[in-house]
Length: 213
Image (tube, rainbow, N blue to C red; front, top):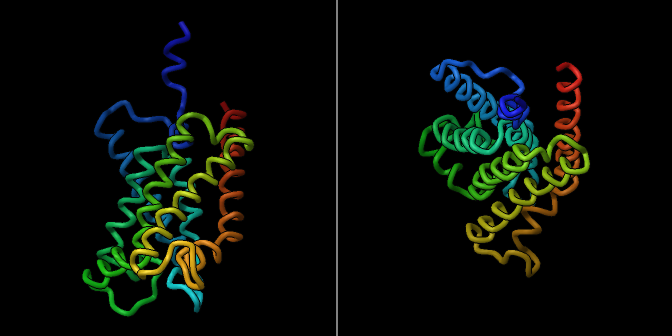
């Protein structure tokens, strides 16, 4: 008698919102959430500070990426960040954390595949990792939510720094100028704060939701 209730237990935060029985409506709902979190990442990208010594800006994107993963789960999290990357090709100035002049598709493609391409791919991978962990309940307690967010942030750094080293033709970690120095170290404190906030928000949201059920 308990099997049906277990089957319908929400896996991620977004599943707390009842899913329509109609298949078309359910798909439309998921698309709306994917688009919404892509837009949230774009909005967070507009909160940026350019640093003179690195081509990578300090922005709010990573916070939105972690929220997308923990809220949407594995597949929808991936879709939201993949959409963010693709959509930015067509509207780079309003979408990416870049203030280069021009708004053509060629300009968007240059940004999408340029120095920060690794970070864009890291966003997709991070949403997947955090989403995967969220679907297994890792975002419901502070003790497991924070490590999940840390894992997501680490994935972004791995992808971002690796591509940065390739694109700029510099060492990953050795030498006076390297990818770790340009693409990881300047952002550690800020990203620790962002992942801590995301890591706290998820369990709080679950506790609130469970208290209302």
